[in-house]
Length: 89
Image (cartoon, rainbow, N blue to C red):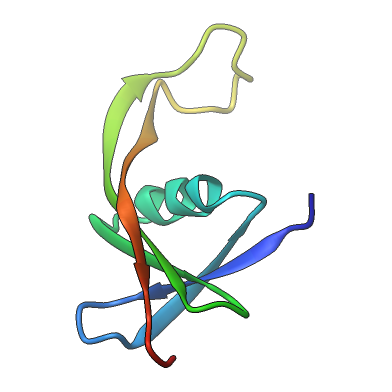
């Protein structure tokens, strides 16, 4: 599978950032880890907007983590809400 680009859109439809991933969920997790809650990702080259609800939670670092990793890390979580079709970009 090819790496795809997903443009992050705000509520007004402005594209405010680009996240990459093979699946929309992978890009959504990256956006959630930056602190975005209401995640609307438009796939580049299409008119599909994937909608996710995102959050990030503090968790203890996993077993076998390298020593330099802090004891608590942010872990992103996303839930897919649906897909919208745009009339025009």
